[in-house]
Image (cartoon, rainbow, N blue to C red; front, side, top):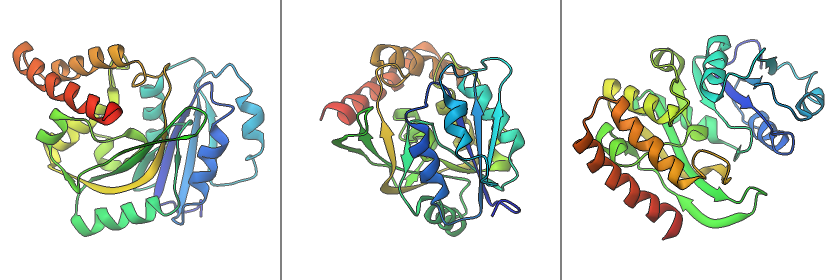
Length: 249
């Protein structure tokens, strides 16, 4: 399967020795030709020992950053290494359900879009089901995305040629959100599969887990996209409403 991968899965890894195994196994069970690129971003834990288990699997490429680059630059490095025509992202603390990539590939080919995301089931960090599900529309437009970032990075499948146009930058805010907005502004709507193919762990230490920090970074996204203070505030109000609905209603 590793000789001619259709999908290259990019997985940055940092402080994830307890969760990355489940993430990797969820990739390897996908029934499409793929490669998995794991980027060790100078993780201080026992990640090397965990990855030793997979050293004989030719689908897995394990590389180490010489210095801590952050998640955006690590993803960009993985994209540069990728041989597949499509790029999928999976964080090392999340996991997929079987059939995800196969269904997304079919969706992209049928609808002739460049990006596809899925719904996500919210989990506690120890993997327990919270009973909360975040849906995604069948078509997500640029305007939709400005009002509410419904595209979770770990659910995305995107054409490699497209993601190469818009590398992830600005680790200080939501680097993936900026990239999705740039892609949709140029290419139109994204496809969505409203099924919980992504199992998403929530952590208070993550960008999205710290709600005040996440709110500040979201406002900066609008500023990076070229919007003034007033328009940014209007979009931020919509973001705040959807955020409350997602996590509390």
